[in-house]
Image (cartoon, rainbow, N blue to C red):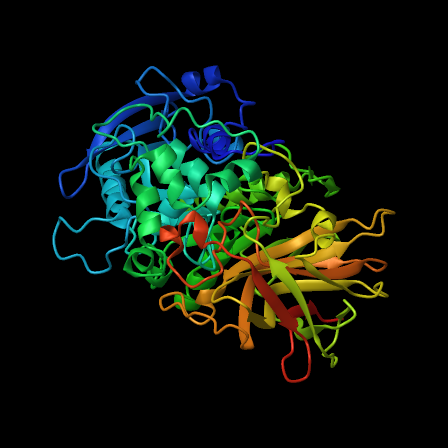
Amino acid sequence: MKKTVFSFLYLITSLFVSAQKSNSSLSLQFIKDNYTKLESMIPMRDGIKLYTAIYIPKDSAEAYPFLLMRTPYSCSPYGPNNYSSNLGPTKDFIKEKYIFVYQDVRGRYMSEGNFQEMTPAIDHKKSNTDVDESSDTYDTIDWLLKNIKNNNGRAGIYGISYPGFYASAALPDAHPALRAVSPQAPVTDEFDGDDANHRGAFFLMDNFSFMNFFDHPRLQPWQQYPPVNNNIKITDVYDFYLKAGAIKNLNRIYFHDSSKIWNEYLAHTTKDEYWQARNIRPHFTNIKPAVLVIGGWFDAEDMFGALKTFEAISQQSPATQASIVMGPWTHGAWSRNEWSSFGGTQFGTNTNLFIQQKELDFFNFYLKNKGSYNKTKATVFVTGSNKWQSFHQWPPSNVKPVRWTINENHQLLLNNTVSKGYDAYISDPANPVPYLNKVSDDRINEYMIADQSFASKRNDVLHYSSPILEKDITLLGGITANLSVSISGTDADFIVKVIDILPDGKATQQLVRAEILRGKFRNSYTDPEPFIPGEITSIHLQLNDVAHTFLKGHRIMIQIQSSWFPLADRNPQQFMNIADANDQDFQKSTIHIYHNTQYPSTIDVFELKN
């Protein structure tokens, strides 16, 4: 998944189309010699038929379990004589032998029906017309058990990103034969933290790029989707999106109402019933299958989804055998043969060997009664120290809450020390802070670990640095920024970054974690509130979890800013529906960050106990 310039088109075609394009060491000829491919249109309970490709081991000496991936990204190659060159989550599964099943989900590629973005789950189905991804998975497994010979009566499902959502969505009211489920970087809650929005802020360039690839109208089943607009030419994302102006201009200039999901996104700019129905987390109750969640600390799309899927299952179905693995990976990078470094950082080992063996052990144990499986709840790679650690829960119990404080001297005090005064900057939508100091034609994944020195030199970015560390400090779990702010307008965004300053001679400011909050959602995603200009207001920004060691001799930095472009769309800095904003609505705002006894600004972290 690593590439100098990332685009969603590359991401999808390189990873999701046949699930594992990187695992090509076993030849296509081996698969043809050892598997028979069948194609079937499997009927669902409402009569809609879903295209399904089934690869059955020719060796009938034993009965095999089903291993299923359901995808909106195509089950190609189509045709009973056209074989995929890769089967299963990793190359090891092909020789292990399963009945591999790939299915185009409802309304995509060669399946019948109408596609819904993140299909809402229906907990209490009253008739056969009440269908969702859980029922489609149930019906698929039921048909397979009855129509494919030499199966052992068990099934598993896996998937990365959107296919990860379909794995998650199979969990509620699962078929009794579904014994093992592995949601990997699953899309989970697209308003709070996955893909479409982060803490209510629209992720501009990712959504525009993805919808152009993904959302061309489909009049009938077909084997390939064209782009929504084949004439979009981008060489510099910052320049392209800035010149495009207000977000509604992108539809007017490029999409011309041809992207249904883009229009849905911009028609629902609060966490209303549209987004609430597409949050799968509340449905993770009474989960029966074993679950292995996999995610990456450098996943720019769905780190939130992995963490929050595991959290929801653990809290709402405590009896479920659920575990999580979080490694130093970008989106889906654990499926590659090699992952020993990222963004210039060396990890000292091929981290994928560990997770690929764990995946194989997981499915073998629950679907074949074969071997053993380590049921440790949480296994995480701690960046900085580059060590795997296991815990009985996540977040772990052997941590202590610590409060950091920023002060008037641009210092980060690693204890709850009193400071005074405030700092201020002018946020200008005409000159937003870049998310990365590089020119590219699409989002670059390396921003998740990139040097932030370019940002700390700007007048519209505040920065606070700790003294040189006299000992290692390991953070495990969530980070919350508690800011006392005032603004001259009625709305603003707040981005907080946690940074590791390296003693490398360049004082590289390596990003560890960052997140954005659209200020009007500071108290509620459903009921946004304007700021009162000049009035001091408290905001609390929850960053995604972290497992990182700041080594002795390093320093820690906090950066605060109000734009992150074009990762997130620009805020006009006045209270309004941003989807309706015109170019002239964007205005400068003076932002004050207070850090005194009455109005403190602090960072809450969880530090590993000595």
